[in-house]
Length: 317
Image (tube, helix red, strand yellow):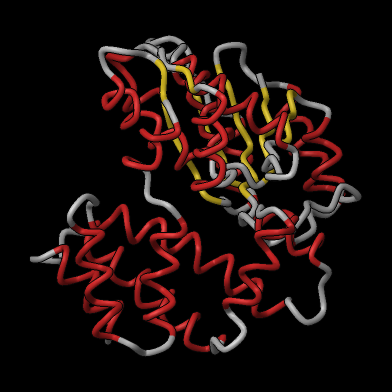
């Protein structure tokens, strides 16, 4: 079978691939599950014509976003189509076009490659805007149900208020909330406020940081460390920085509705953030984001001896 998952919501794309991966023999995962990043055309054809071995079904994931910024000629398109039509029944091939979150980009549906893949088992995994409250609440409720926990009305409101529409972060927070609520299975607003990193907490910290009031920023950072792991703080701050950079870069030319769509934030929150960021320099935001990206790489690569200090140095260098 051929599948095509595309869009900004990486959490949903990962889950769709995960469902297919469950059908593989766990004893042969190393041989039966392969991932490729934008392989060159000859390699792509070879991959599409792969033959599963004696260990049963095989799953191949092809990250193909780069293919949408180039054009296959008619001869190449014909070979791709033929390879897809000859797909082995024991081979599942998943094309993934993961779009950058919050940048408002779309795949060009006019391209022959898109039209070909859209005829397969195609699914767009779009980010749910925060202003579509009912849709977002329904999605969160399903994630919570799969974990064996539920949120009361105020708990749901608090979670969306603090996290927004980032399903991956919501999924992680629900894991913590489930443990915190045990032996009960209902999450309340108070639990959310105690357990989840709030944007307000980070705003207080980042406000001082952007104003170059490093003494107070350092104090706020160390307060967060009392209850949060440095990488968790870094990840949340990265998400916020990405949104702030969009707001600073597009704030003067885009409407609040357009900014809401780009950032996944409610229009009201967009306006508040624009006001707070009024005196912030875009270059400072970009530099800070790069520092944090470098720190995250060093930490995950095992190059950082002291994780807390690594993040601290990235913040205050």
